[in-house]
Amino acid sequence: MTVYISHLKQKLGLLATTLRVVIAPVVLLGIYIPSNDKLKYICAGLFIIGSVTDWLDGYWARKYNGVTDFGKFYDPAADKIIVLSAFITLLVLQRISPYLVFLLLSRDFIIGAVRSAAATKNIVISAKPLGKWKTAIQMFCIPVLFVNINYFDLPLIEIAIFGLWLSLALSLLSAAEYINLFVKETKTK
Image (cartoon, rainbow, N blue to C red; front, side, top):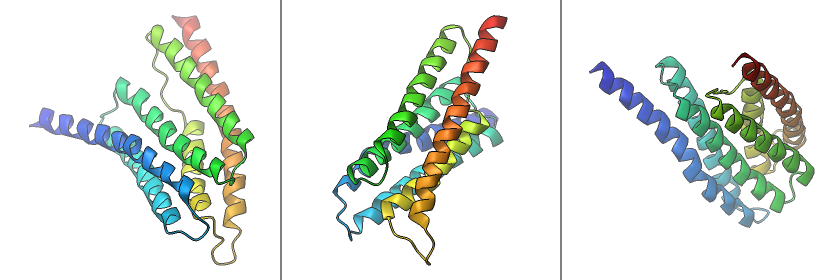
């Protein structure tokens, strides 16, 4: 029975991660958001669902000891896919800077290369706190920019744009952390 429950928990985590990948192309429908369309709320809601599945997946994996090497690769890839779909949408809507997206994606490609190189040496580099904070900030800011409305006289749009630039700073710091860890690990092997 315990083996079955453990297997079920791993399947739930895999399902949660896969849901983010499936939601991503639907988020791209946001490209067609006119200025006062309800589609912006649908896209924001789907993105939030994807964000919640990311949190749930991590929670289940840690709580039930369901962390797998596959999950260490698949989960960050699913995060990047859904965030990329949102960034493409926000770029087309001209709500974020192409420089921001270029720098964030470049960092992700570099980290992907570092993880691949590490894998060839049987080193698995899992997500670190700075990278998790970067993702959390993005998962908060992106829905705000989909909706693109300042509620309660709060400058939510400006806060979200600042948050994405902050996520870039954290992203670059975490890239240095990943590279440093890779260098240390390869020296010991």
